[in-house]
Image (cartoon, rainbow, N blue to C red; front, top):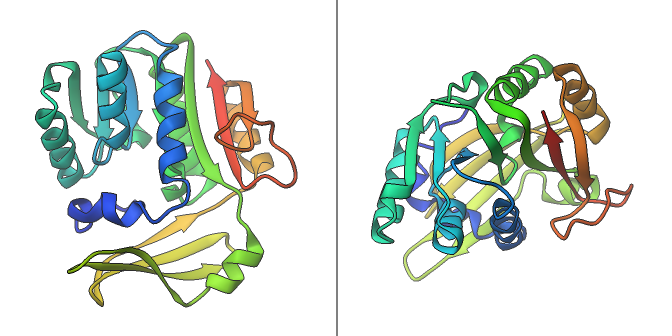
Length: 242
């Protein structure tokens, strides 16, 4: 799996070019109010979501990431807000998650699940998460549903993600439609900054793994406004219960 080591410093600028950047944050911040802490964010990254939760609800949070550079960015951000006493950071791969105690709520935002390349790894991850939840605990994650028409138009061309006076960040996408895989190269000022593979799947594919692991599906949304999934949806947001 990718670690984002080289892009950690520029992650927020880069990801802000995604049209779901803000609505994803708003969704997970709102969801967190339903649960007692400590809650858990997998793939905490730069803590952009956790920071807003801490500021709004002051819930104890455990943040997990396999990238040390991302954890450093998280720590700096939370320290600036004076909220480090509410945060525990763990350097772990969520596929082999080991929390200090079971949680009532775990969430994994912004398509992090798409870094898992195959059925076996996805099942390991979901099993690990299941085993770290309390009975009746909830796990929420999201992923896109590929817009193939858009993907074909974006294939093998650079897309601007962020621009300022001295920084230009662009993505170059190469799609492997047969294997449901995207190769993304991230450029900063025309120099390759990061390169990784990313995977997509249909709701029916992940549904089978969810059932095999033992989760119950509480809700399945097609957008971040909690509308029901339909054949025209571009996102899949899963609310699972142990």
